[in-house]
Amino acid sequence: MAPVGTLYTVPAQWKGKAIRAVAALGNVEIALPEQYEHYVDNKKPEFLAKFPHGKIPAWDGADGFKLFESTAIARYSECFGYLHFGSDASIGCMWREMTVSIDWIGLDWILSLLRGMVVAIEVEGKSPRNGDIVGLASLAPNANLLGSTREEDALVEQWMHLAETEVDMYTTLVAGITSSIIPYSKPAHNTFLERQTRALNTINQHLTANTFLVGERLTLADLWVAVIVQKAVGATVDAAARASLPALIRHLETVANQPKVKEFYGDIVYAEKGLAFVPPVKEKAPKAEKAPAAPKPKAAPKPKDDDEEEPDVPAEPKQKNPLDDLPKSTLNLEDWKRAYSNKETRGADGAIEWFYANNDPVGYSVWRVDFKYNEELTQTFMSANQVTGFFNRLEASRKYIFGSVGVLGESNNSVIAGVFIARGQDIEPVVNAAPDWESYAYTKLDLSKEEDKKFFEGALAWDLEIDGKKWVDGKNLK
Image (cartoon, rainbow, N blue to C red; front, side):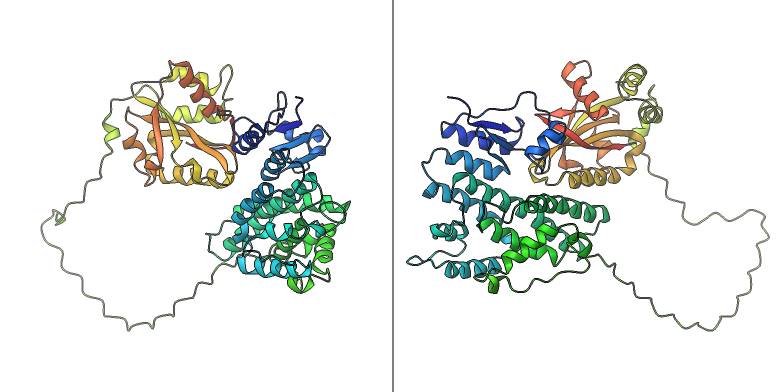
């Protein structure tokens, strides 16, 4: 059997694994691209011509049909096993996906909107359950809200998922960060807006040549995306941003003003300026009234004894770090930090070569560092900020340690890993200055072993790769 299409993914991507599993269970053969390199090939013009958002997984069908967004591809690959769209199993796939994300917009708003749509499309004889969003659309086959072919069905899912995860999520995050529900960070605020704008531009570009998102008539994708965009234009997408999104705004107004659904959308409220963080004003403390000046006491006569009096309580001796008691090392850590900063990392006369020539394996040890809770990581820039915070909390140990730690993978599928060069042979006295040091696992590396040496050099050079996850951001503790 010839492959029905090509799936662009990487071996470690869990979304790609899920799609391949669905295809395998359905006895569907799919191909993987030869020599695909993520972060390189997906930025090339020929890839972006097929998939304008530049994301994987992405589907290039043998019949020319193209699709991005993982849930859309997974459902589409499952649909190969059905003779026609509309089976209970395919509807169930979409229902599971949509109920996960309903809270982003607001359950009451969505349910009231879609309850009205059920009436508007004149569904009779069935009483849908609360929240059965996709089920509602499927009850009106003549309305074709889910598309009329399996390709259109998958495209409906594609646009809905893009709007949820890359438009509405950032509307919510900006609202949280500007209202101090999330601690404010200007770089994070800018990143949220940049990523939302990227998705809005993708939708706008598609709508420049198309009246509706899928096919030639209104679908659930249009209804859903319009709800999300309506929320965004009232919060984060200000007048200046809207000026570059004319097709998107035209689509919003077209959908929201459809006679049968207009009452559910209500008036579109456009924000002139996007949500902004306003630092709280510090109240000035009232000035205390000046007390009358007390008469200056007369100076006590100086004792006749020439010797100065000793203080009653001796000063507390400064605590000594036990690492200072270790035998003197032949490796000067400050020299290493300068070499790492000023030399090329790899190659002749590079920093790695310098380290091997000057290393003192008795006075210093090399450790692999792994975050224990990678499943909790979301956006890669947030993970990088976490590493920065960890390094800041190691300030008291800075003279005893060097670190090169990075984020590998992509958002929602990443790990934090790297290396430390630490004074002595025990890592705990060096890292326990940070309260969160136990959130990381520490494994001593033996640089005489090729595997450990490769990991060490990759972390220093910021080209480390773990299970197919490539280095995307790094931090140094110097």
